Length: 196
Length: 112
Picture 1: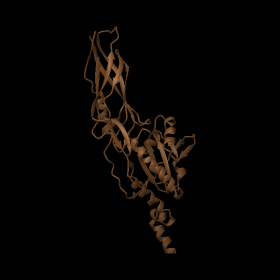
Picture 2: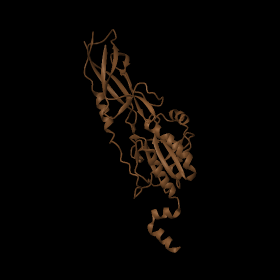
Picture 3: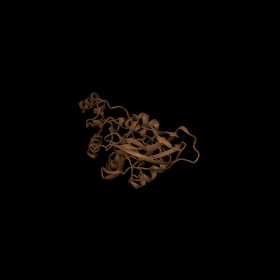
Picture 4: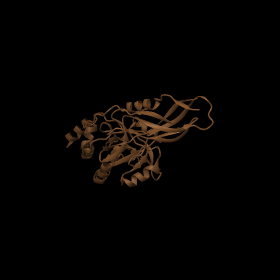
C-alpha cells in the first residue's frame, strides 16, 4: 500500500496575501498636521493590573508606541525611547508603549526587564487597535501634543531617531501658553498681544 | 516517504526561520494535525542571516520547501484522503512586522 502525493499550493497563496498587507514605505512628513485631530482615548491595564488611560497624560507630549515582543524593528526603536524618557520626561514628555502581544504579560514582562524599559507599558487589545486604524504593521507610533491631538503624520514602521527627536523637541518647545493659544485660536492670541 | 510543501515569501519580506536568534521572535513551524499518515519529522531549509539595525536575524526568504517525512500505518484503507496541518509564521520587512499568523494547509493523498 502506498501514498501518492498531489500538488499543494495553499501556503504560497497565504504568503502572497500576507505580503500584500503592506502598502510599501509610508511617507514621513516632518510638518505638523494642520487640522490635528484628538487622539482616541483608551483605557488599558498595566503589568500591575492598574487601569491607565491616555487622557491621564493630558498636558504632556506623548509618544504613543504600539509594538510587540516579536517585532524586530520595534526592538531597534525601544532603546531610543528609553533614552528619550530619561532626557525629556522632566520637560513634559511621556512615552507610552502599548504591546499588542497576544500572549500577554508572560512574554511582555521578561522583555521589559531584558530591555530595561523605563516607561509605562500597557497591554493592547482589538478595541484599541481599531481605534488606531487596525495596527496591521508594527511598530506604529503617534506623537500626541499637550492638548491630546495627534500632531504629526502616523509613523508606520521603523523611523529615523532624528525624526522622532525633531517632533518631540518641537512640541516640548511649544509649551509656552502664548504659543499654545496661537495654535488654537490665532484671533485670541492676537487680542492678548494687543492688550499688553 | 517525503512530501514537500512549497512556501513563497514575496520579495522584500522575510519570515523568521525555525530557529530565530532572539527568544522573543516567533519561529516558522509546520505542524500536521490530522490525516491517515503519521508525520515523523519536518525538515526546514538552510536559513539565511540578515542584519536589521544592529541585530542579526535568522530568516527564510523567497521560495523554499518544507519537507515532511510521513510514515504509513500498517492498516490503511485505499482511497482519497488528506493530511491537514497548520503553518505558523511571522513576517517582516526591514522596517515593519506583521502579526503572527497561522494558515491551514491540506495535502491531498491517494492511498493505493
